[in-house]
Length: 80
Length: 138
Figure (tube, rainbow over the protein chains, first blue to last red):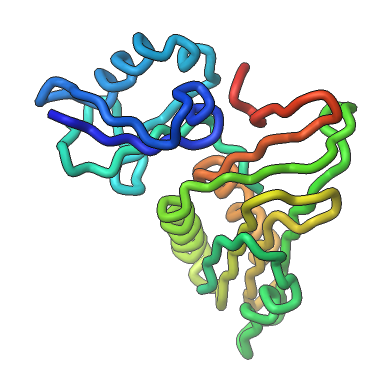
């Protein structure tokens, strides 16, 4: 399936774009997606943490992604 | 409940006025401002970036959690700025009103502390000789 990701902050700089489209196995989980991304963009491994948001909620590692999900990488937040 | 993410200067007085309530004996506000240094290194300015839709949603969830923890909360306002901010600019305002003061301090602190942990907003510090995304690396 094709997934579309939004990128912010340091992850936008690592990937070099604010959006990323990629092909993933149909049963790809959040953890699987992160592994796929870390292989493609090794600098993601250097981050303190990197969560995944699906439809504006933090997603668990075992959440199974769907093609229409609005997915975003959430590197360590630093608002306030 | 006033929840807002803006790229314009925050009107602090209006944000505090938004929590005025007849049942309130206390109004408590936290105002986060841009500091001129980070661990001793002079900061020139800050750049805030947000995942807008999720940031507003998560700010609302934090306010709702506070309302559950302190049912006596009268009103809550959370306003965060994004974009480029100079030293002294207001980055965030949290204001709450409660019947008595103790809960107003606790609720205000809970909201700003939780906001800093969960709301997808990122701060980049600009120094004379470079820029760093805060907390990105260990």
